[in-house]
Image (cartoon, rainbow, N blue to C red; front, side, top):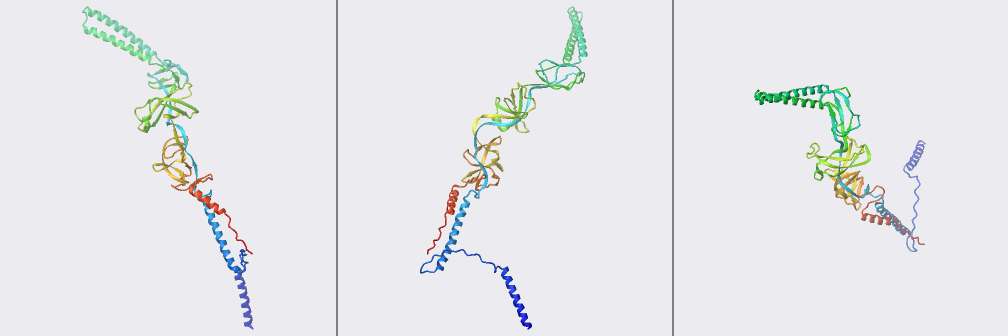
Length: 422
């Protein structure tokens, strides 16, 4: 009896384990419906053989479609080329010129200083106002100097009288020649003393050395000033000068009389012109530069000494120049390079650059006006890599484009259906 119960339990457990195994391993899942295949039958042949051949033909057609679609993707607009920004060089009429930084300075400038110590008794000017040449600007106390001059003149008169008497006595042989010479010497010393006193008196009156505009004074009436002490500045600003430096490599192209244009940050949008009138024969050893000085008209008085100036010096006449955006030129070692696009591929090209102006650079050699260049995105390029326009356009090779079109046409061609014969 026990053996019978044990056998029943084992049978039940086996059935449960079998059902679980079928569930977990998918045995119990329904099979996917078979795709019906049209079988061509004939009166005397077997339908199974024909169906087998048709089944083999269908996968073969599908494989052909996939192969045709693959080249179509390669030739599409999203091809494997690196996206970059493309452009064309421009041809502009640029004057050959060189730019420099300079400063404006007065045509004439002087600091009015006292040559003699003394107390200021009068300031005969208004600050910031024009003055005439020879106008008295500062008067120092001259009372002592005038007294000394009177004393010198009195001694001069006495010395002349003694000399006249000595000369008369010498003619009568009442005195020796030495006595006459001593009297003459005394007279000449008196004359010199008068001249010295007059000169000291003159230096107590300070006059304008040229016509100009007076600056801001640093002394007032009643101040005691020492000799050499600054009192006020005087500036002549019409015409006005501009000093600037250019690299020594342009020395052979610089000459007196060359035209220049000046832009001032303080007066934006107002161009000024001038001409070079002097070239320093000694170069600036600190920067190996040629120091130049030009003059500009300033009758309006708008230009002030000390203004910051951006100078463009014209070296030659206007000429047609190939220019490209400055960002398209890269530096590799000591070479400057660009990438040209030839047959859909980026070609590394060494270029020789000239002047740079307003975000553009002149190309002297290496790129012509008809080339297609990479304007932006060249950092990701290597020589010979395929590229395409970043905006969605493509720059493929002509052969690759033709192959892409052919593959795309094959991919779109319909697969012939197998007719079912009855």
